[in-house]
Length: 228
Image (tube, rainbow, N blue to C red; front, side):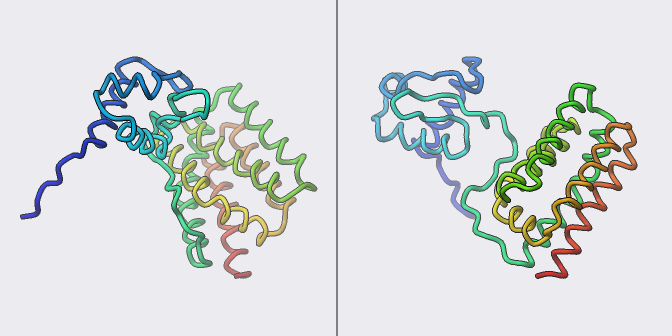
């Protein structure tokens, strides 16, 4: 029988910090007590407290701003977190990344067609218009606009967990996504396919939105397979 690992002081402090945030009703962006105040509150040394704070900062639960203080982080309520230590992906892994997106994103496009409000649709069209303005610009700017479109589509599906899955995939593998854009090398075609997806969502045609998202990602995957 394996020995049960006992929680360390840092583990306990991490949990107590989370309790402080939750029970205090703190929201992302709210300022927390200073390091000195927290050390006194939890009766621990500053170095011990800082270890717990670094853990929380690594997951985005808190944000430590130099010269300003400690704040609740934007990721405090996330279920799925991107791994910041991922290495670059090889060619075969690029295809696996696209394969994962093909499984996940088309149903989300269908859900977006069913659930998006009129205001949501206006925001999504604005995102795509921004991408259109970058068609002749830098790769980095167009890449960011394209990823914003995919993130926004996932968000409009109304499932926060799947939204976080897509966001994590696109965040962790940002360099690979930009590499895919460079290999695909057809900005207008990519944009037109995004536009077709948007039009299906605006028309509330869930089946068409799903098929167009799947076709778009399969198209990209086929081009990558042929060029790697």
